[in-house]
Length: 138
Image (cartoon, rainbow, N blue to C red; front, side, top):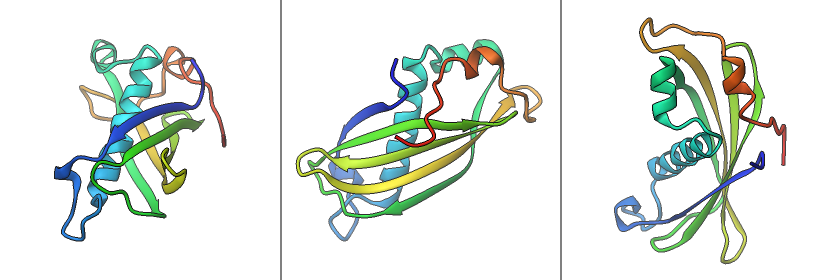
């Protein structure tokens, strides 16, 4: 599986704000959906983390908006793991409109790996880290 994962989404009417473009929360939702789809494609769907008793939670998001997305636009979310530390991971994103190549946003999420029972940080298991190729920048 390639290090760079692509997730395609079509902007829905319920993702449009009062200014007529996709609202900020929609971008965040696309990021999380892309991350979950990438994880599942790498052999780590939600059920696998539940069996392990540990998994990822968000520590922080950073989004830089570059151009608006409109209802009906197709948005390609590119995502990749940019690095691992003992208990955390950095995931990056780039959102583009394939029709005209416009860059809509770039973003990053810091994820923390936690034990679901104790809700405390836990070292990332080797089998989880091995599932992803680290790509510092595409």
